[in-house]
Image (cartoon, rainbow, N blue to C red):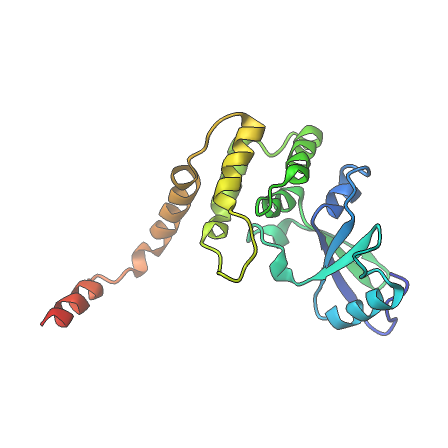
Length: 205
């Protein structure tokens, strides 16, 4: 951090495994430190290149990302923890949001992260996890063809088997309840005329 320019402020967010290492278990180490910067991405990238921390051949390196790489609950910013270190505002997402983001990959280390957080914090419970994933239901939409992201629906089933030794019907227990709540919120704005039926009728004339 001392290598960053002194003429501006920086807002940095750590995600991936490093927040768990900093806040919960120092031995939970990852070779890559996932980081994104708000307005100062180019300056941070230049510093990382200058001191060699962007080199994936290093034992520990920094992977500079964009905020869109952190695919998690839409509520993550409101519960993230931020500390000020000189001119740097460093933000660590809440463990639940770190865990949700790990569902896209759900490798062995990601499952260990779930077990570690539950062991140390007692959370999330099965019900808490189900509710949080309902709030993050858009993560279950199909990926773009160009995206190289795991199947979060399958990974959710794997997670339930690993942690709670049971099956979960993702569509019935997560997607359907979340969409039902949305429909209830949209109800006053739903058109009273069935425009789609009208368009079908016109196309058939």
